[in-house]
Image (cartoon, rainbow, N blue to C red; front, side):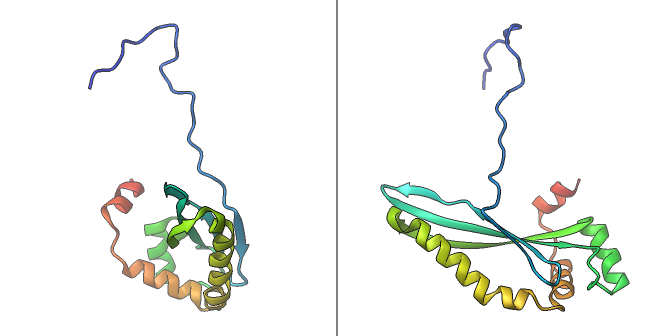
Amino acid sequence: MLLPPVNPQQPTVSTATSVAAPPFAEERLTNGLYLRFFDQSNRYFGDYHRLRIVVEIELNLSNELLTDPELLIAAKKRFGAKLTTNKVLERMGVPGSRVDALRAELVASYQTEVESYLSRPEVPQRLLRAELANKPSASTILRMR
């Protein structure tokens, strides 16, 4: 691909910045897990939308409920100071008039069904064990470098 010639009068670095949208909802659970809800929805055909909510679950590895020292050493070596996982809530073919209502329904449903489990005191330790058992993907390995 050919690039246009550089004009010395114009800056060569792009001044446009791509900033991720802030979460539209956040919540700290009693066991120290921190939940953030990001809206990544888009319109894909006419007035039909793909409703996509990404729930980011963050576990700070200095959490007092993490008591296994060997587990913490392995986790800090692999994840650093915190572990972050994602859960995607998605619906396709949502009419434009239903987007806001369905977004609220998805978040409320997640909060009533899943957060009661996630707020248990043993969940941070279980989450850490489960994530350590998962083999890192190539993208995870590249991000760690």
